[in-house]
Every structure is written in structure tokens, then in C-alpha cells.
Length: 279
Image (cartoon, rainbow, N blue to C red; front, side, top):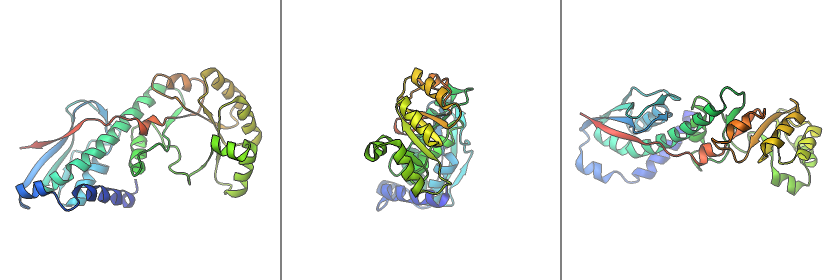
């Protein structure tokens, strides 16, 4: 993650929570009070964000806060494992607790789900990737969690990253052929073109247009296998739609190159992490 962009996000999250100050903490503790705390896993998970996000939250509040023992991104841990140790001003630890926990619980949830999907397709060559179905304001972090999970990858980050001609583009334009023609006339030659298809006839049209990536959207396994045979290595093949942990291996076995899973970011359950005070 670009720390310039990340720090801007984190400052906004802290400002939202603190607003005019933490009246509870400020009433109980003086600026001189010191404390120690640990982030602890309450359940098994794939860890992301201890040093890259949580420690940075506390550091933005007070650079004097010491963060140690951060579990590396992509590590798999069990219940009860210490993920990060903190020491510093009591006020700072309490002010940053909720923002830091909210973020890493979300990111660890995404990473845990992403690694579960990656496990299902191993050792098949298909790659698991995310989509743009992210939480508004959290895309930078959520896509980082997918990438740092140790097994999954990113699709395009935004609409400006690559061409993806989808069903509504085709419906509004009239055909895949015309949509591809217009794209080639309007974007640099360095940009690859991907087209979403849901029929074998559309796959054939994509091949005639020589597009770089063909998405097989919501196809059953038999049709998907036919499409892979038709394409025969002439384009990168992405499968999408209706992908879950029960179906992903069968999809991978059809021979597709990429499987995009919106659930990685829109349906991941936050993992349970606590901040425990240390004596």
C-alpha cells in the first residue's frame, strides 16, 4: 500500500471516531499515564494488517507508542495467539483501539476467506482474484488484504485500470464486435481488453475480435469446459459468477486461468480480535 494514501485514510477514520476528543479516557487518565496491551486472536485466522495498519494507527496518534511482535501478513494463527504488542500513553492506546480493531478484524476476515479459496484450488493452476465489490472508502485496504493473504490476487483496482466490456456495455452498444471496435479506437494499445460472455456464441465473437481476456460469466461447468476447448489458449480465461467454496474447485478443474470472487470482499466475516491489557 502507498503509505501516503493509507495515512490519509487512517487520519480520516481517526477523526471520525475522535471528533472533539475522547471524553471518557481524558476524564479518567492523565497524559502521563502509561500502559501496555496486546492484540489477541480469539479464533483461527489468516492475519493481515498488524504492522501495516494497526501499528500505523497508533503511530499516527502518537509516534512514541512502541509496537512490537507484529505477526507478518499472510501468517495463519490459532486461537489465543498474540498478534501485536503495544506500549505507550494510556490515552493513546484507548483512543486508537476501536479504529485499529475495526480495520484489522475486517482485513483478517478477508484474508482468511481468500486463503480458504486459494486452498481449494491448490495445486490447480487457476488463480483466485477479487473484484470491485469492495466497501466504499476501504478499497485500498481490502484489496491489500486479498493480496497479502498468501494465495489470492487482485483484479483491476478501479475503472481506470483496464478495459472490461460487460453485459450492459454490449446491450447499450449493440454487439461485442462494435464495443471492441470503439474501445480499440479510444484507448492506448498498451491496455488489454476483457469481455464478459454468457454464451458460447459470444465466446466465438470474442475470438473473432482477438480480445485478450474472455470472462465466462455464470456458465455451468459443461458449458465452461466447451468454452475452454474453443478458446484453446488464444485468450486468458476468467470464470465469474456464483463462485463459492463448494463450487470453486470444479470451476478450476475446467481449465480456466482466473476465477474472480466478489465474496472475498463483500461477504467476508470479520474475525474476532481483542485488545487485552497487560500488567
